Length: 510
Image (cartoon, rainbow, N blue to C red; front, top):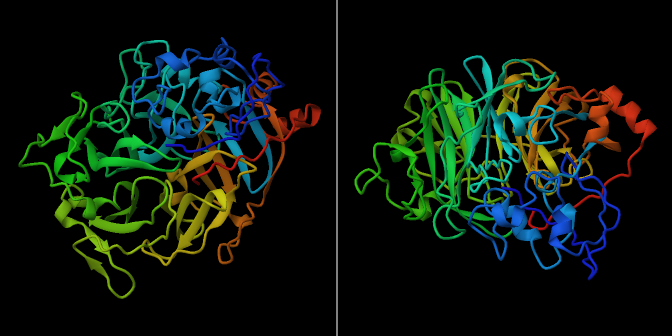
């Protein structure tokens, strides 16, 4: 789900290659000279060096690319897209960089991907993925990811529409300690929770993406969206949104048919998907685009005996509405009430009232003990990550404060708050961040005391001092075997081998 478009690099007739900067582990990319041929473009070292022939069907244009990555590559696969910098690192095998940051925010861990010392590629067949929606269940922190790709050599590329990792509970100060994939195959490799139909773009269902997740104690719930097509950067269309439930700690999942918010008449789902009750003409909710268009993506907040659900249209252009339901009635669509605005209270039907104005991209909302306020994080035009605060779940919400700007993560998206700070009075906020060019997930930490949320602005209180390649950092002991970064050691390396600052890439459509 990552729209972006780096400036096109020139392609010459001889296929010569200029000097190539490291492709950012953090989503940034170095400068790259021209490249003439696809063969030299992809190289021999990348896990997906047969990229053009092996990605599953669902092509956007002439290239067979699909899944969450497709919304990015839709804007980069053109006649001039022959530069290695225009493809994710897990495709090219290129080394990545870590920004050396000074100020409020730091990069704490490389969580996923082949350049992560956590080795999610080897252990769980997670070479490329995004999102990292985290929630607490039975003392552990579960991390839910979107479209996930393996090493691209098998026929099906190990493309899973979603996967989940169990990590150790408690503070992520020393990184998210990955324990296992849930569910998994007998070898421990991550398997899909709800597999998409993987049909061609615009013809049915390309994939099924999680947008929110919670645990109520015994059961897990997630909201998913069925993606019909990826189109312009920042835009995609859906078939429906649905609540999905697990009663066995995430090992199996069932779509709750009556919770489907249908905007098309699609019924060609993957045959492995389980429903309750079985979907038919009597159990399927009616298609109602007028009612459900604005409720295809979600963010969950558990508060005061209710599940609050912030909903947005598919894509990254719309506002957020708010609905809530008593926790014990989550599965009953008739029990949901919708916020109609100050003085108007709650009603039985979607009201069209915007609690957060457009544009709301991927959204994460939690209560923060340290600030004693509710916080909402989403990308915004002023920065890759912005944060609003409120005294109540329904607002009014403050203007956005930039937390991470494009000099730090030029191609970042989908900040997802780690649950640790909900009930712990810590000045540090932990959250995951995805990057479209790396197409992997990173853990960040921000010092909230560095900001005045009563007077928000576009200053992230952080500067990029330099960048260090992942291989250099690992070889020099700045990253441990779980991907946790030693900031002091990273600074020492940067002083000895300072890297050229990488350019800010402002993708169209954001």
